[in-house]
Amino acid sequence: MTACVLTPYANRRVVAEAAQRNPAEIVPLGFLDLDAKDVLQQAQEFGKLGYRGLGELEFVKKPFTDPTYLPVYELANEYGWTVLFHTGIVLRRKFDEPEDVASYRMRAFHLEEIARRYPRITVIGAHCGNPEYEWAAEVARWNPNVFFDLSGSTLHKMSDRLTDFRKIFWWSGTGEGTPTPDNDPSAFSKLVFGSDTSLNSIENVIGQYRSLFGACGVPEPTQRLIMGGTLSKIFKLTG
Image (cartoon, rainbow, N blue to C red):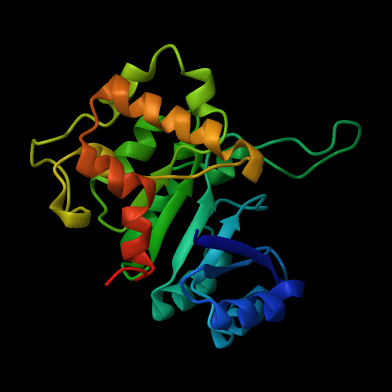
């Protein structure tokens, strides 16, 4: 099993050391607060320690494309990092006091500008923009460095209408998209596996993905890309 470990800054060294010992099993990604005063310094430190990217970036105080965040993306572009962004509706942590959180700051269409400005970043949007799936799919369609996962509530809430995803990822075999891993002709090749659950629930999430594949007639080669093949290529885990 290979794990992409989302690592808080305080734990950066122990995970970096573990990744150096086990490079095929641990892919370290740096977790940071884009609004922290020293965010660029934190990102630089992750880079010095050999981290492979950043994420999951979330709970931002401004939209993802705000100019104050661009230096971090510029650094990620220099490193050729993978950056995982939260997209769509976001949980509410506090119910009895004010909270400076808003889902619109993390809408999937913000990733288009980032992907175009910084073409060496591999952009992954968590949750496929839930509920703005069409925006997410179209951003992925025209940007070869953008992928989305279906972690979270989507495959549960849409379990009785999974065929709707054939309308969202509609361009299979049409030549209407951009290059994909292995030049796969299926629009579903813009998805990668993701889960928000504990390890004890992973089997159930895999079953949800399998149900999606069956409902939408996703070809077997595309399924293999989604279930690990694409991320293995991105992180150069295969020969």
